[in-house]
Structures are given as structure tokens and as C-alpha cells.
Amino acid sequence: MSKKQKTRCGIGDKIVVMGASAGGIKTLKLILQGVPRDFPSPILITQHLSPTFQKLEHFAFLLELACEIKVKVAEEGEFLYPGVAYICPPARHMEIITDDNFPCIKLSINKKINYGMPCIDLLFSSISQVYKDKAMGIILTGMLRDGVNGLKEIRKARGMTIAESKETAESYGMPRKALEEGAARLSVPNYEIRNHLIRFTARV
View 1 (cartoon, rainbow, N blue to C red):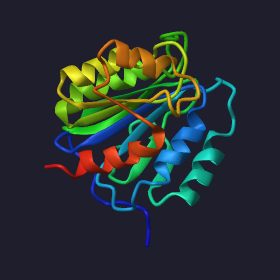
View 2 (view 1 turned 180 degrees about the horizontal axis):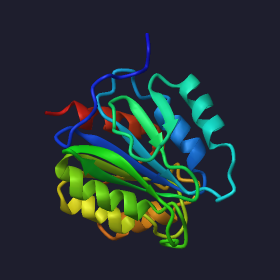
View 3 (view 1 turned 90 degrees about the vertical axis):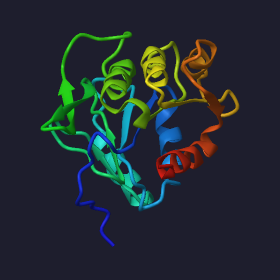
View 4 (view 1 turned 180 degrees about the vertical axis):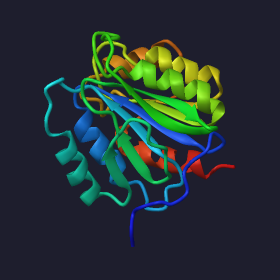
């Protein structure tokens, strides 16, 4: 059965966004491998990467082979489809904007934010504005605090927010700040996160 989905998502549909840094590639693989083929929402991912990282497309291809859902590198202007995970390319910022009332991806080359590009906060903030309470934001392993302010905005918009717990986070800086500052409603080990994704998107 093809993994391609035909119906693009609207602003009334639910969405999942994840941000990760050190140790994130391994964690993302663990989470995405457990997402079922009929997952009803898109998943957007900002993973901190070196600007010279050349293996993202190969990683996305190998990850898709191991997953039920489609995994791809995000492209400028593309619309969102359920059951597809979009990974921000290195040396780009990724946001969500609307085109004729449909959410689509905006990629930009700009100054570094929170010491890096891509910036998790930028993606999370745009998601909170477009999707409001239809969004689930997740901060995974990573140092410093990128993503914390954006996660606060998702929570303020009444979306669901999660931080990876110390039990499994290779680097607990970002998740710890998200929990301490009230951005995350839940602290969850990475092997349980996919269950929260499934429950959140299944609710009416």
C-alpha cells in the first residue's frame, strides 16, 4: 500500500511538532517507528544540525524505510498531508504560514536565532498562531533552551505540550527548562511519546 496521502490538511486539522538537538536523531527514529500508517496528522520536525550536514535526505530515506509513515525533507511552499513527517533542512528556518487558508511550509535563510539555524522556537511559534489548540508540541533531548518559548506559546493557545523526561533524554537541558518554566504539561520518556501522539490526534 502506498504511503502517499491525497488530501492536504487544513487549519482545522491537528498537527504535531517536535524539536530536538543533541541525541535527537536516535530519539526521532524511536518515536517515528511506532507511528501507524493511518496517522491522521502531519508531523513537523526541527532537529539542530550542522550547516554542512549532507546526509539528511539519506537519513530521511532510511527512516521512511523503517517507518509506516512517509518521512521527507521539507520543501519551500509545500502543503501538509496526514501521515507525513517533514524534517527541516540544515541552515534553514522552518515556519508554517497559510496559502488560500491551507497551511504550508516556509523555509528561510536568516540570522541565527537561539545560537542556531534552524530554530525550534520559530517553528513552534508559527504553529501556535495557525493551529492554536489543534497543535501538539514536543521538546526532545538537547542543550540550552531553544523551543521553550515557542512551547509556551502552544500551551497558551491551549495546545498539548510535552517534554522528554530525564529518564531517556541524552541531554536534558531543553526538556528541563520546558518543564521548569511551565511550557510543558507533561514529562514523558521517549518510548511513550508515540502513544501520546496517537491519543491526541484521535480525539475529536
